Amino acid sequence: NAGSLQEQEDERGLAHFLEHMAFNGTQHFAKHEIIDFLEGVGMRFGSHLNASTSFDETTYKLEIPTDDAEVIDRAFLILEDWASGILFEADEIDKERGVVIEEWRARKGVGQRLMEKQLPLMYYGSKYVDRLPIGLVPVIESLTREQFVSFYRKWYRPDLMAVVAVGDFDAEEIEALIKGHFEGLKNPDDAPEREVYPLVDHDETLFSIETDPELSSSSAGIYFKTDKQEYGT
Image (cartoon, rainbow, N blue to C red):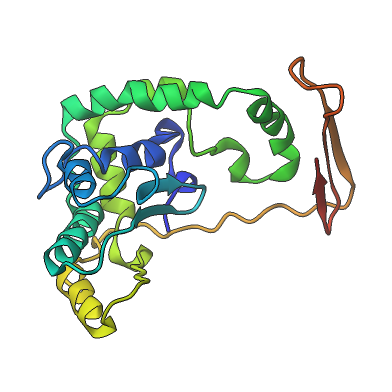
């Protein structure tokens, strides 16, 4: 339950960047050993191993074989490390900056441009407008290890976490693994309150008609918002 809405102005993009760092060294898995291990048991990055960051949550997903107890336990060790053992080594942060910036650049197509024009209406008067998870390049280029550690400590904490397990397994055994790997986690004494950022209501109907040189003649970017409903194409 933590995403880009929890960022400060000088942290825009940190929550998503932090998600990347979860695959670049943890307490029990150095450098890229997490990916090496999971691919070694037949998983594919992107299909069975993935993560995503949104405005108000960050999700990590593993799909593993359930016929090997050692693999299952090691998968939970990975989840435990993501919850409390990411290392944020300075050299790995610097290596990953280019990856995150390239992801930002790859999104700069017609769809993203139109969305950014429509955001002030879609998220009228709210913090959502200024907190796209991909962040800002100048911030991504300047984030320090201390900023990662601070954000991680404040927001990656048990009262904002959930573990969901679905599959063909013994439920009691999985519950025991969850307790064994996570019951030792503690909330920091100075944990900040997680604020809720509602959309601002309005009486008038807001509308936006946008164009872009790359739009085909049969396409358009149209969006309007009333006080009750939203419509867009």
